[in-house]
Image (cartoon, rainbow, N blue to C red; front, side, top):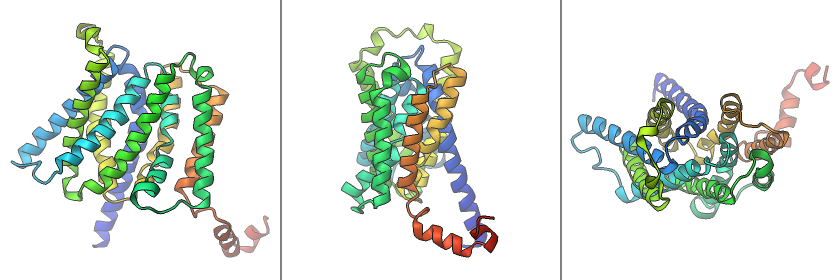
Length: 321
């Protein structure tokens, strides 16, 4: 590979990481706006069905058989785990939990990916630093879950549990998808995955009885624009970036998007929706972020590396002058 190709690839990766870092941080706010007038599973169905069909039309225009090399069974499984459970239960939970707190709980994704990868996929045991980081992150999540009442008022325990299930589903789907998709089929696989996720959310909307009290005529411009934003940016752009990165970068590193998302979501929730940002929320956020950071950046701040840095530093730096 030439140096120019490497540079282009590096720029592409940076752009893809930036997309999932910041776009998915803003989608929590868009979801909060959308579900004010559109029931959660119905909004998810509309979002992923339109995004998936739009992608299919575009792919079909380019290739008469765009799904020829897609493993439909794996696309269905990952669609249910990611776009279905991972996204759908977050939508449902945001009926009773602020967008910033929802994003904060989802921050546990990198830790869960690490543990699931150890248990079922790569079989590589986490290091001592990873275990310490996992413990700290779990303490932060437990603090959020235990004190959700003080963070966001009355929060039904089912909303909290649905967020935790969504986090596990998304994490497991991430690892399954990394194995299932090939670099040349990213767009087609994402297209199929979104359609299967939409079908799952449509089923959940029927089970939850959302259609019995949904009035399309009552949907305002704000909710429509939020859905459009979720379709274009949250699904077509960010989800494709996520899957593309999974074909090139280790899954736990791709999952670092969850480090930035809650910061964006908490700030937007406080600024736009006037959601309360309490000291407990800030403390819990710090615990989760520190824990996840320790898991993801293993080997960066080890004693050996720090000593090596000190030895290489100029004398004035080494003496602390």
